[in-house]
Image 1 (cartoon, helix red, strand yellow):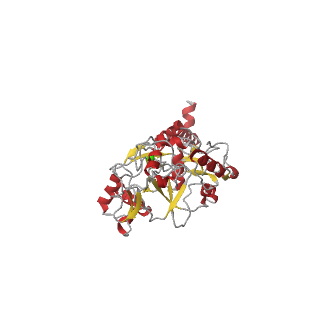
Image 2 (tube, rainbow, N blue to C red):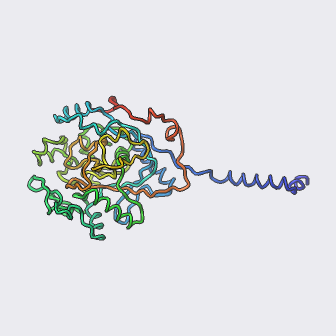
Image 3 (cartoon, rainbow, N blue to C red):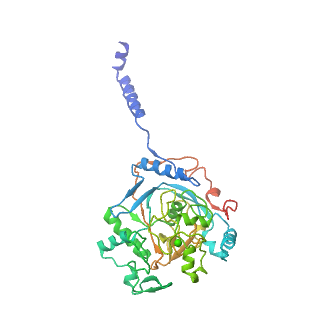
Length: 396
Ligand SMILES: [Ca+2]
């Protein structure tokens, strides 16, 4: 009686309403947060788990196939150490000891200083390089003519063990047999960007080339070794198409300029995409097969000044970044940290690309903060900054 009487008064009614609202809010989920970033190094199980957790959190599949028949895997946000984890001297020693190949220590300068990089947004990366068939759909749909077909110089081809540039070569003809499922080659950075723009229009999604940082983070997939499969170059034969023993026999003259591995990987020229096992993120051919264009301008000393969060490369430049090495590159060129570059008009029959999709917008959600993954706490400037080579970690 007394209770009924009390709540009949305006002051008590207000308290009851406030209390009810509070209880309702308690029953609801609090402000939603996304999972933390993956902190390298992490193992294959953690890579897969991170993909699953992030896919669930943002309500998108871990893998999907687009209308162009391209398979994609989700790459969760993370933090890793970009650049070479070995010293120049150690790299030179390894390739001399195993292959009697005299590398110039200065050729590694571009991979230092190694530095921490945060990739703050999830993205999809194509599991494979863009194939001949997928590129053909682009050409068929738009009538696009590649740089090699437009400028009168042509692409590069291999015939009778000789490599040459000729107008008869383009993505359609490369001097060796290409199947529909082979990676497209003889495409320039300009051609790759045109493909991304077409794909974005067609799918009504945002596709582009990966940044150099996204590429290395995705390639390493939590590893800090020379290759995602470990430190030993000979292990590449199990996971990649590189300059191998068969290649060295086919190109005895070229052998003098490249660190071909002793093992056989089964291919002299390109291999069909996904002929080799994927890395822990599900990405095939991150080492070898074809060089992959990245979005960034190239600068050899960029690592000394690049931002630690989502670096986009220099603002200007004359050449674009190429990563991963190719079927004609030896073990030193296909390393996770190795950086190549060439003009946006460059093309040859060992150069292709893969793409990323970046329109994943978990609106209203906030990335979970913690000591280790909040950019504003925990990781001091010294720790986030430029790091010396970790001589004790890499093996030869
Ligand atoms: Ca090979």
